[in-house]
Length: 266
Figure 1 (tube, rainbow, N blue to C red):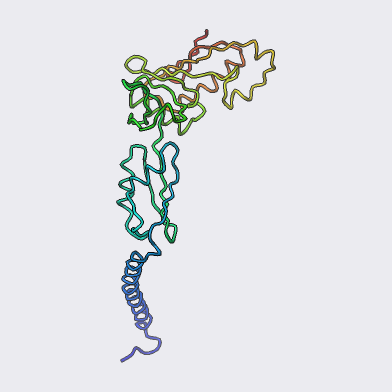
Figure 2 (cartoon, helix red, strand yellow; figure 1 turned 120 degrees about the vertical axis):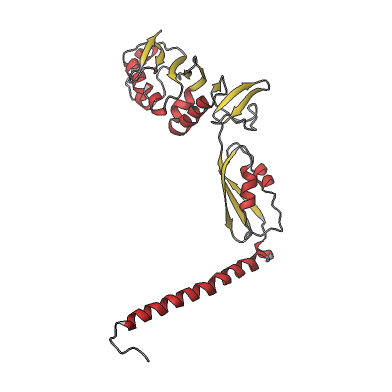
């Protein structure tokens, strides 16, 4: 017996039937999609013909493809989680993602584990990352403009990694970094001409006569506590700017004291 028109049960039953119909449709579509994909994996049209490697800087794309271990009989629809796992075993790979470009191309996007320093070893200088892991990069053949880390200290190398990401101007000026006692770090900064190449200093108006009269040491020493933050190191920019305005010949900046930057003149 059907519900009379206007009965409060009629709308509820219609909603219920719609929900059952939606569930039934999903149950039909899910196996269909799985079967379609399974069928596509067997088609020659979707066999892998090429691999594109994106995001590499020091890592050879051929090395990435080699570690994937893929062949032309594999389909682009196959599970590529094992391929990603193989590539991630490379010390230079921080992360990897594979996408498809139909009909026959796999695109692997690499987030490369970049070197942050050159560290002395019995084998000579070695490129290391922010965790102290030696990367298989030949410093004699690769274009590595990196500071020298006198010790393979994880705290120092982590600081260099943070500087490379957040203060690249300051990172490029570092020529050497090393421990300064048990809880300190000594950083050697290169000077590039009379005016330090930072936005704060570049804006200072100096005529050529005044600039030529200022003689700066080639290296500026910066002392800080081990574990110093990137923002704290960036405090040297306004200090350098002020010292340049006053034409002070500073040789060292000391950041070991809270909320102070102590300048030691030459």
